[in-house]
Image (tube, rainbow, N blue to C red):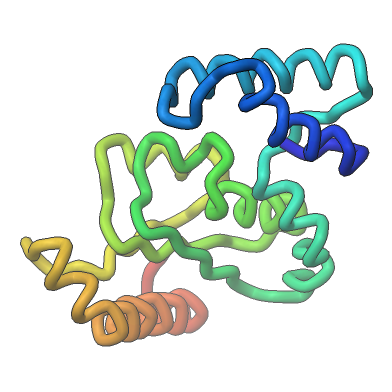
Length: 166
């Protein structure tokens, strides 16, 4: 959520203790903050925006990727939630506007990961090769990421030479 005015953000952060809701009562706290945000949006001119849109605007993502032939993005875990505001979906949205294909590299793939194809991600590559624990994947992340990036580069080179579709 982005608020137009910083005082609104400060009020939101400070309002919880004043209203007698403890930080440990997370569900009530969350509900209170949601209602507070809704009130700010309705009455104080606040604006709700996905975080990825804010970051994309701030870093001028569209102008940075203009002219690229391929965009590679990534996420720790790509699953059915990814199209709903996670970074790869935002990157794909910007690339789609420019007609640039997108490949996502993921630490792991969860249920419904193929839903990202609907938001413009052409291919999803997991860094994991076979079954491995989270601890092992994290310990070997640099090696696994490099191998996944190489697979993407080889597939893209093959596509460019007309050998196969990515």
